[in-house]
Image 1: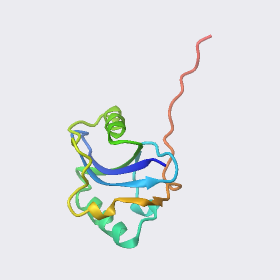
Image 2: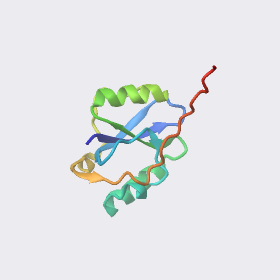
Image 3: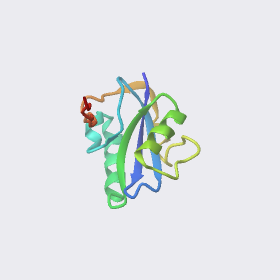
Image 4: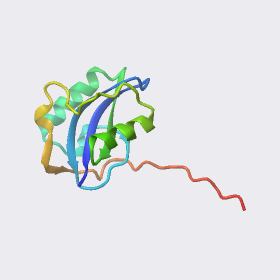
Length: 122
C-alpha cells in the first residue's frame, strides 16, 4: 500500500500546505479533490476538512497525490508545476491526528486522471 498525501495547493502553483497523509488501498494518481466525502473519512475529520477548504477556497484548492515516500511525492508535485514545497512532511497545525497508517482510505470515488496519447506517425 502506498501513502496518499492530502494537501492544499495554491491556485497559482507557488506553494502548498500538507494537510495529512493517509494509507491508500490502491494507487492514486494526482487528482484535485472535489469533496472530502469521496474519501469516506470519519465525520469529524470530514467536517474539519470541509471548513478548511471552504475558508481558503479562493487561493487554495485541495489535491490528492499517491506516493510511497516523501521524496517521490515532491517529484510528482514538481511535475504538476508546484514550487515552494515544504522540506519536511509535517502536516498542518491541528491535523497531526489525521495521519492514519493503520486504516485504509477508500479511493474509489476519486476521478482517474486521463492522459493524452499521441498518434504514431507511420
